[in-house]
Length: 123
Image 1 (cartoon, rainbow, N blue to C red):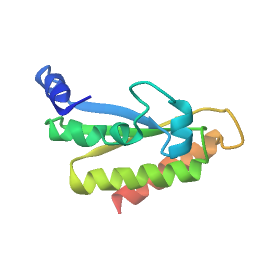
Image 2: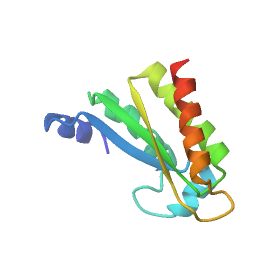
Image 3: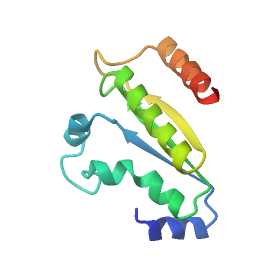
């Protein structure tokens, strides 16, 4: 969505815009979106910047755990959250996962990941 599109959403009273990156792993992202409007990785990952520039109150980001190594996704998502928090506004971090392959996490790992994320964001 363009900044103008986000301004239209804002005019209807939207408060928080949430969007999953699905994966921060570039090659996997392109494999998941070989064509179409989501094919442009950079455009998609910078959607939150455009939303905040348009006046959206805050944004929620997330990765879809299970497509690639969850440790990579966690670090990339936290890096994105810290960037947005320092340069823009409040950021919500969302957790979703798939049980697809060797990169998948068990429920315990997801709970632990959420705890560590909250700890690092508070400190």
